[in-house]
Length: 232
Ligand code: HPA
Image (cartoon, rainbow, N blue to C red; front, side, top):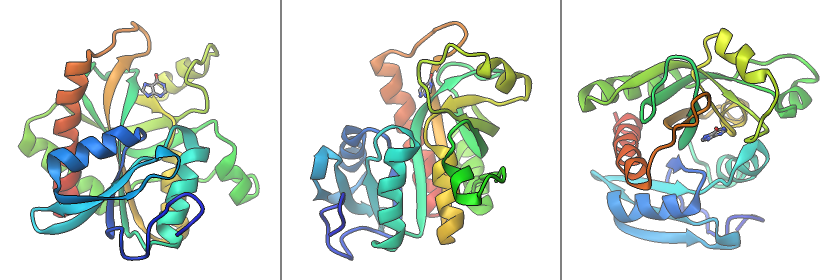
């Protein structure tokens, strides 16, 4: 048991998918896992463990933003010995992305101050695990989904009226979300493997959004890519 995860050591698999939304964790378990067991209900931040193609796997909600994700991921790495963590989320598209595309995040820039606090002010570049990234790209190709590989940005504000997005777009950043720079830094700190895959749920410039049905279909393809990458 940790402060935020009411599970015993061993209840959580070495490989975990991390959606922001705990109900997505439940959806992943119900749709992709054999014999899923729910191991956490603390704060309704559900986590499940089951089997995918013979491999033990978990799915845990993280909440939104680097602070919330950091709580869960620190406990998963430190106390539950998770070795491979794949964030499966949504993101806002900028630049050359289109609605419903999958973005595989090589690195994540950020305006969050958390990593600088850890480094004492140095601009650390949080990057994905290369093997996971390469496996996810291979799985996305096989799957036939439209995907991009490149840099994203982890922003503290969802409702951002500043010029930050113009700068990010001019630097070729593909999408914005709210968790990855924290996940990649924690993976580096604990020497674990991490990757973020996200689907473009809204276009920042045009305000186009996916329907609930499209989000579900896009989410399904992304989970398949994530699980294939995890056990490649
Ligand atoms: N901003 C930040 N995070 C997001 C967005 C967004 O527009 N869409 C989905 N996640």
